[in-house]
Structure formats: C-alpha cells, structure tokens
Image (cartoon, rainbow, N blue to C red; front, side, top):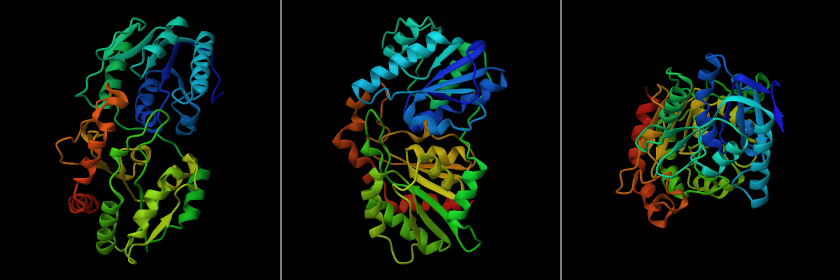
Length: 359
C-alpha cells in the first residue's frame, strides 16, 4: 500500500525508512523539509499503524505502508518482505535508515541499496555508510549528522511537521466551539506504548496529575482540560478525572478518536501537557504551547529548543537512565524505574507550567 504522488524514484530520489513508533516517526519528520529544499523526491517507508502521521504532508512524495515490523512474527516477516520488494522495484540515490538495525540493513543490502544508517557498538557490515549514534547528542542532531555526511546537507531544522486538513480543523472547531470564555488545555497522561514494548515508567502518576490540574483550575479558571488518548489510557484518565475538583472543567475524548481526529482536536487547543509520548510531539509540530514531563528519558535530548516548548525533568538518581542501545533489558523498563516520576513533586510541575503559561 502507498499513497501520494506516484514515482519510481531515480538519482534524485531519497528513501527514508522509519518503521515505528508514532512518536519516533513524527520526530523524524524534521528532516523532510531539508530534503525537499535540496530538490529531492522523498519516499517514506513506515508501518501501517504510523501512516496517519504522514498523510497530507507536502514534503513527502510517496508513503509506503508496510506490515507492522515489530508486531507478530507473521506481520514482521510480511513487513520485511514488502520492504525488500519495494526496494527492488525502486531506484534511490541513498536509503536513509533511521534505525540501528542489522536486520533492516541486511534486507536493504539484499536489494542492492546504498544504505546510510546508525551504529553504536554493534557490528553492521551491510551499511554503505555508517553514522555513529552518539548517546549524549540530541535526537535531531543524529539525523542532521546523517544528512550532512550522506548528502552534504549542512543546514539544520528543528521543526517537526504534521499537517491537518482544512476539513479536519473545521471539524475540531465545531466540536470544541472556541470562545473568549474558555481556553483549552489538552493532555494525555498515558501513552508510552508501541508495537515492540511499553515503558510505564515514563508516565506521571495520576494522583500527581490531578493535583497539578486542580491547582491550575484554581488559578486559571478559564482553562478546560481536554483528555486525549487511546483506549489503553481510559483507566489512567478515569483515575485523574475522579480526583478533579468541581472547579476543574474537563472534556473526555479518551479512546473515542482516531489519530487524525486527535491531532485535529489538538490543533484547536491552546496548550498541551504530557509525558514523553506521541501527542506531545504532535502538539510541538502543530506549534501549540507544549509542556513535557520527563523521567527515565532525557528531555534535553528529545525536546526541541523552540519558543513554544518547555519541559521539566524529574530529579531522581535514576532520572534519564534510558539507554536506547539496551532495548527492553535496560533500567528504564525495570520496576525500580517506576519511582522516577513519583519523585517529581506536583508543586514543582505546577510552578514550572504556571511560569510557562504566563510567558
């Protein structure tokens, strides 16, 4: 399956491969305007579940939706075979593999592609060009380094891109019915789940969220809290809403909207707060005031330094312990990491968020 403008590629065509997850795909989107500015035709390969992120994106000429590699064994095999088939059929100057994956590199090598990919300590003989994955560098700088070494693109861009259609925005406006009487603050307290794993240590505790929201409702009575998220977030959001004061006005859309609808509704809001998860990056891409709450992952390596972005990092001995080279065996996935977010006091989150809202 593929959508947008048809092209079989060629010497001016670049393939970008980022199969998952939703948040990672939208974080990778900052490279797309740079590729288009340098005149490349851009093909983007991703999992079916991530394609909504790229719909209506003018910087992508064609999107290839593969079976979800990282899902079931059957889906993973289908995804890899589909990737191989499309790569054999299309011509590319370079394939930019935004993964550290010897398996994906091998598939691309079988297709005879000049693949540029990341490495850390692992051996990967299937890459045409290797880019060192610096654990202390910002995620966007990894991609900038790849563009620089592989294509000579030295310009940098820190703006992620997501596009809502006029119809989607109109639908969201009609649903929220904006007025001078209210301001909408969207949030998602769940997330941290993808095809391959979940990291519950990234979630700020529901009790703490409720305390922050109640303080906000008291000082900023115009704000209406808009709960967004998947069905897997229902229990977390219910726990928060049960603890809200009568003064805290809220709307609950948890589990009721598609990815595109959630993003459209987010585009009609004024502020977003959330953990290190997908909707935080959608809000950033849409240019909405975005406030991230970070624990096992490092906000300084993930959040872009843009005027409408702020974050707070938990102060705990294990804060920032996530190491992407360790996979699910890493400390961030273990039980002891659950204490990181619990150590972040609601009053500290509130004060930081309050200062951001008053800017």
